Length: 280
Image (cartoon, rainbow, N blue to C red; front, side, top):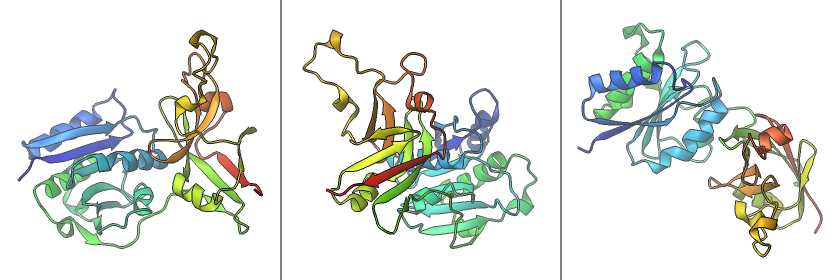
């Protein structure tokens, strides 16, 4: 049996003991396991941000990997715990919308609502519940042993862009701001092109207007101009990023020098992005 892989995605940060304690707990149960940190820098309680990160990271791991997502994990009547099998991967998290981004594109094979809490007294569910469930799965355990099957999961609001009846406008939202301050929207390339049908467009964000989406960041550079005479750093641009989401970026952005799309344009999480399609 190959070594199990368990990934961790949390909003715990690097300063406190939480991430280390989870790893220690897992190693106490499973000596032969590989633990990988995806991120511990998710903004506190930000389910949209966590959903974007895990959606774009999980498929890079081998099939059978178990992904523990510790965001907004306190158990209550509106925030139950779930384990999901999807795309031959396992996810252990709260039922708070985190899985809705992945599930909108790939149907889950199985979802259970975790029900082992009566056997565990905890104020730290990622440590005491999620880690235990992950180890159970890593040992080959079935999901039905630790939970009851369910069919529905919570959705994140504004996950899907709005399209008007005339099909000449898309209204999207900012769902993630990366380490460079680039602003990622919930508008994917395929969705955009399906509505666009080759028409020209205007894209508006906080008073900024764009008429072109670049293929890659360096497309904004005119390489025919000598390097010392270029003034490309700090230029705003649109691009479909490596995950195929529409992104507003600043070329070679740096918040301490040329600035970033987030700081210069004042764009924040869930801000509105409007695309208007024009008559050809």
